[in-house]
Each structure stands twice: as C-alpha cells, then as structure tokens.
Image (cartoon, rainbow, N blue to C red; front, side, top):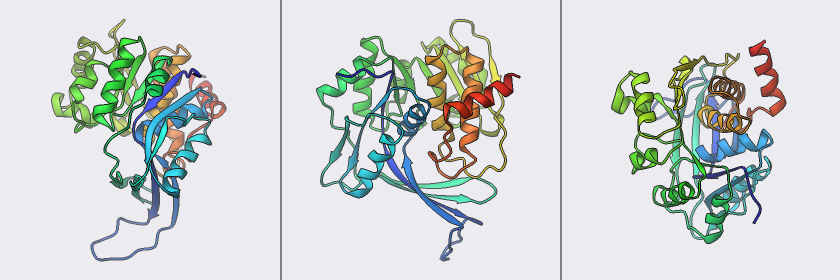
Length: 304
C-alpha cells in the first residue's frame, strides 16, 4: 500500500456559502451578494490545505450518495489528496452545511446537516493506511470509529493531532491519546476559564507533547513539553477579512506542515497564522487556502 505523510480521519461536507449585507431577520427573504459551493469539514479542510502545500496526504471518511457526495470527494482530489478510503454510503444523503456570512465583518453562522452519516464504516485497508503514516489528524467527527483508529495509530508509533469541540463524545479520552492538541478558547474555557497558560500546562502534564490554543483575533498561545515556555503569536493581519470559515482548520493543516519541516514552535505557529489569515481573504474554507509559495513569502517577510 502507498504510504502518506499525513492521514486525516473525520467528516467531509459540502458547504453552501452566502454572503449577505446583514444577518436575515425572522420571516424575511434576502438575496445574497454572492454565493459559493465548496468542500468542507474540519479534518478534511486541514488535509486539503496540506495537499495544497504539497504534502502527501490521504483522507479516511465517508459521504452520502449522489452528486453532492461526489463533489465533496472531487474537492479533495483537486488538492492532490488521496481519497481511496473515502467510502460512499448508499441510501444516505450527503453532509451539507449552509453558511451565512455577514459582509465586511466576516462572521458566520453555520447550519450543519450530517445527512444521517453517524458512523464511519471501517476496513482493514484504513488501518494499514494509518499504520504507515507519520501523523494522524482527526476531528473526532465519528467518535467511536475515530477513537479506534487513534488508538491503533498510537500503538504503532504514529503521532496524533486532534481538533476537538467541547461537546465531542469521549473528548477526554481523545486528549489523553493526543500528541499535538490544537483547540479553540471555547474548548478550554469549559474547564479553565480564561487561564490559558494553566490549561496549556495541564494538557502537557497529561501527556500532550504540543498544546496550542487559538484565541480568534487575539492570535494563539502554545507550549511544548520539552521546554514548557509559553509562546504567543498574533494573528496575521489581512484586509479585507471576507470570511473566517475554515480558518481554524487551515491553522491545523499548516501547523502539521511545520512539524514535517521541523519548524520550532514559534515559527510553526507563525506559519499557521499566516495560512489562516490568507484564507480569510476569500469566501469559504477552501478557496483562500494559500499555496506554499504564498505562505513562505509572507513568512519570510514576517521574519524579515
């Protein structure tokens, strides 16, 4: 079986995005300024960003039948991602998200329909794919099956990167198995309030090698197990901010690229902030993902 540097495991969706002048009021009808249909999903978008950066990647996931599910697969293939382990579930509708974006603000509201895809059918080939990877990146979208693959990866020396939500089932078990934890401040505040440094140290003490908390417009804060120094990195400022959809997913993918390149923690976080920032110049989670040339040019200018 072909080997890949990074294998993603999680949900893959199609996002229908509409940019509006203001969020619609109840019982009203509005016409968007413009619309777009793109691939989505947390792990899928991170892997798509890695593909655009030139990393050899594969995705393990599932889609519903029909043209929308096929479109989701094709969006990954266009980024060079191997989709042999993205299985179609006949009899199920595809996962489709409706995203409403407020113009000039970039904030968005998401209505996510999983299409009845509550489970990921596992096959022996998926385990073999994971075994031969350097990193496994998961969003725990299919908690039961994702956890099985994460445990298998851990047993075989594959590094685990986790993107989790506060409501993820068995989230604490996922965190215990994680080597690289990148979560939003919403995830952290359920247990630690606004004491982000305390949270980082707690994650490291529980076995995480690298812990990073993304703080929205306030950038990100991180820590490595081998030195325990707190590293803070501001956002990469861009104008205009069109849409923040997928910025966190892109951050994850870019950080894993930095790991493959042996960047130190600060440089990897800066590179991730750049990729996430550049993404926000365009609508959707995928359209604005930067190429390696674009991201490295911005990093070189930043390091100056």
